Length: 341
Image 1 (cartoon, one colour):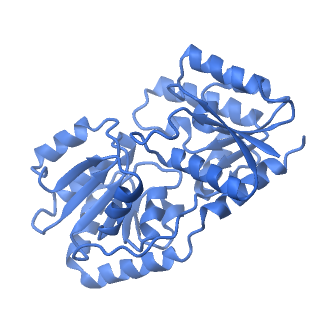
Image 2 (image 1 turned 90 degrees about the vertical axis):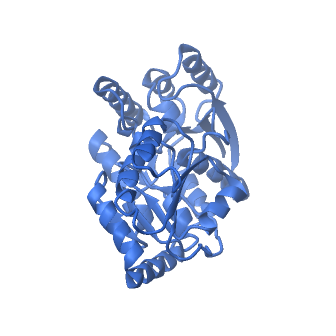
Image 3 (image 1 turned 135 degrees about the vertical axis):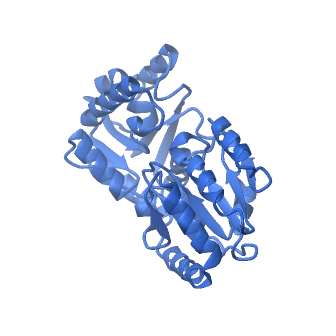
């Protein structure tokens, strides 16, 4: 079986890393190791709201695939354009991989969110199968869109040595694109309440809308303590994890939270929100958009040695429970294999 995988054009752009792109790329690599032939089809465009040219390219790419073939589509590309995807559903075995429901992106005008939500529903109902990247996301997609079944296939992790940290307390790390959905403003406000103790925090990720966060950092006089490093990949990102004492992620919405498992794979304690499946029992899960809860948790982290020890122990236990990318790929390939030709 050849698996045709339709991807956004920026899947390998090092200046714009994302969990969805990492998932796609790592799954492709593991599928090849498992002996599954994968044909990559990358479609440049401003997905999920592409230009007419991008829509035409997607339509042309799908039209060029032989009848009965298995096509795995990244939901960012597929879900916003049912008028392109649905006409091909009768002759192709379509599987849609949803990294984030389109309407869940923070900051969308209500009319745009409603339009994207309706488009996504039409696309997913036409697909032969739908895949989400966590059990929580699968349940939400199924309930919200009225789907009979959504497969939950969580991301893998790479084995990594335990992080050395710095002094075990003061170096904080947040890996996330600077967008409203990731909640950096919540973290900055919380950090502003604990300036009486020594700490530094690295914000690692592309600045897609970082202006308000920069302004907030300046407003609280934290420019010398919060480092806006930008996107990192490969060894530089590994070093950022290795030197972290605590990983923090204040997201308002996540389907999984791969950066959390990357931290846990190194035994780094985690305080986060909106990531129940990734975190498991490996750290402290807080309500989203709750500055007070984050401030209290940070205060306790800095002042309660026994609690720090407990969080480290929980992270190290969770580290042993994480699946690999090969296991993720093996689960994923079973989904299209079960579809009728």
